[in-house]
Length: 265
Image (cartoon, rainbow, N blue to C red; front, side, top):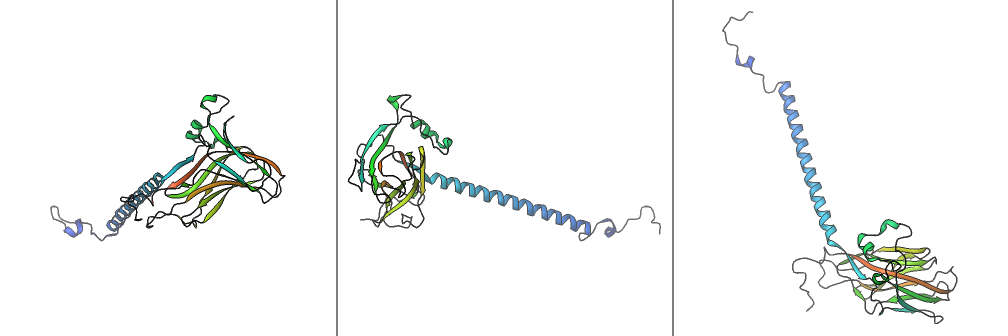
């Protein structure tokens, strides 16, 4: 039927119904785009929060120098054998200090501090030398101690020390004391190489330490470094040298407003 000119069409014919397939499809697209945008923004915020938490956690971990051995005359060495001579000696670093397995491992601070005595004896770095005598293979050991134990503030996470080896298979350990007075030995590694190497050891989680819920300080104490004679090595004089004893500590569980007030009165 031909519609007369000027006759108005019904509004229902001119307007597209809201529930028509075309409009419904557009609505779904809008909802999908909105959901994707919300998901993207949420993921970005979560990633930002995670990065912030990681940065704060990293800032809580401090690299603490326990001893650079520049003034190490008061360290003492003790051996299980009465034979030979056991002693320590502060000596000038001669030649560069770099890891024999990873020469690029030096940090900027280490590069600035490890000054070669062959280049400038006046500003040379000092290291601690240890001499002993091993007779009973697999039994003898030598231990070097500071004049007093070092209190580790915060949670001790990792210890490290630079060692100059002479390609003996003897094993280096670190000795720690917990707040109960129990001694623990952690293996730093064998000295079966020529040159310098940075030895590190992670403090195991089962070793008791302070926590934010502790009423009293339950800190670790550094006691000593010692070397055990390998049962398959030859007996005789043994030398090794150490430098830059450090610990990584986590202060997040010990530093908070009011943490300086101790409940020990």
